Length: 293
Image (cartoon, rainbow, N blue to C red; front, side, top):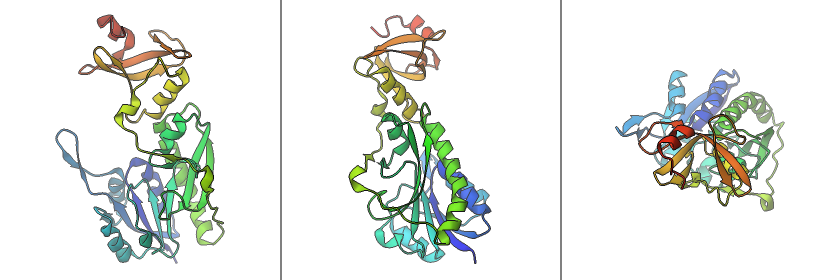
């Protein structure tokens, strides 16, 4: 008999897993929980999240979760054997988590108990971690603190957040079928997290992207560039406003501009001033020779 799966997700990183689950012959997706459509852009156009768009294409039943009380109704209607949550952004009440026969599983993009919270990929990059990965954990009341059911390590050196999001999303999708077969067969041994080595991370504000060459090392600025490539980007305050740094290099190249850091230098390639189009830094300085003075 097929196992009944209730899936919750929002962004693009949850879509590959949903597609893989749809192809599994041993399960049935009884519902896909998504947030309500939100107004986006200056025109405030109501926009569907990537998971909702994918669920519609896959012809799956969709349930909007506008408030926590909606969850109980969705679980009751679908009667799942297992719920799977990937980047959903809603705290599930404890009584909801245990409703399915096999509980509720969350996919987290770090090697738990490291980097519990909202920004595990960005935080790992900022911390200079050379290795991170994905963890499947049993959801409990405390955020990202449940027993780890599966984890896989990967090198993350010199990789950006957007690259790792895409990579981890695909690896999650590929790992799910074998994991679920073993999980439902009782072949997975839960591994409790060690609380005294747990670390935590929060959402970043736009201001986190500011760089301070006088007091930051070249490597710290490089890690910021990698960590914040998807959002908010990095910027340098100048006389003409915040200069968005769109391309950066650790070594001198043609048409780069050297910026002195606390321990050396780093090289700007492309940037953008407020109200202007992106341009090579050398061109920006040609029109604004006193930009950094």
